[in-house]
Length: 275
Length: 278
Image (cartoon, each protein chain N blue to C red):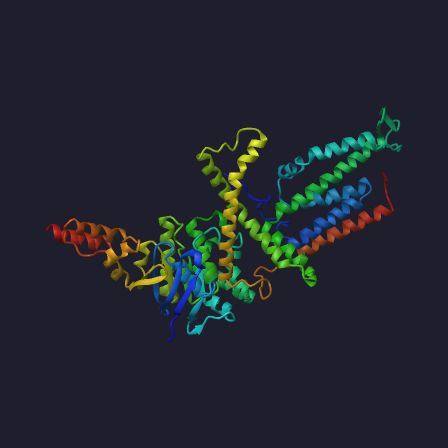
């Protein structure tokens, strides 16, 4: 079976003076996978996302989606399959009313009117916003706005969904809402998810985590495996999740605790050491 | 606080007029303006006023709201009326008094002048009430939709109707966001010691510059982001696009249209066969 996303020997740069280069990037995402992409600012995470649906064109190399190489001709077919939700909840909505905005993508691809209506219903139910169908977007909370943005992408029924730091501008509650919605989409609808974030806690929900640095993929493992390599993460300007960081410091202070990523495991570890 | 300023003056209730097709309401306004300018006598203008009164009643807009729209142009109306009272002249006699009531140098108050001023004032009031009724009963979004639909014939001459409507609706959508942003930037500049609300007019205008520049920059950044988000959702212009919400004429629209047609017909007839000419 072909991979959902495949980057083959991709090179990209924003021009000489930007100082960013991506070279010989090879990376793939399987269908149904939930991948978290981690990295500090300017590590190339967003570039990775934008290459996937042709918002950016690679200088060389090839990108294919479900086995089909991305070209200028099939751009719109690819965009139907690969949806991106962006960072800023205030600059993604086109219309003022929830329902009109969710309809936008489906209107663009020229679906029959009845189907658009059904898809709006489906997308809003999937993100738990069905009661807000006729609400004014500017009066919603940040988390709700991002859920509407997700619904707007979902209305196109994409098979891959990329969240490009979509939680970065939200409060903790909004972040939790988004991550839960995405997790559910992955499990129930089988949507392949690429979650780009710099919040380490969010990566824990993924089945695989990838760390990027200076346009390169430098680590690839299960999230637990990645966080076990705390010192390495810190080299790439990333921090451990809170609990992992506590465990690391305890170890630094001479306590023999094993790696832990949730409170209960850490508590047990500490109890073992103390007794 | 700026956020609470609802744009336009849409008054959200369910009513007969609210439910009318926005296209019809736009056409109705145009037709109505034609009617009040065709009207040459009080009887005709009275018929117009009666139709408008009916519309206001069926729109369930409180009278106070309607009056607020009138208040905005009250000065203008009184000013034009006053000018007309003093300079109109004419020697028609309407009631049991001399035609010229008062005269001093070039000023001449005549019966004809008073009657004509009243007529003009009434006409202006009707004009304003009818146009504000449109914005009270139609959301900016459906107004744009209606306009897009009405301008569709212009596509034949390659006029970018879809793009224009999209620009309008995006502009409307970004008003609350940019208002918010303005407030944030103003606060940020105040925190840095900017005196935004003191000093003379020249100083104040100057003080706006450090607010406008960041606002403009952020608007450009947002435009960029919105462009990406639209691209990602398969936007490729208006060609293969469908509109989810289809505008439909209903019996209500037919009724309103009939009323307007009757009004215009009546007023036109009265123009040629006046009943009580001014």
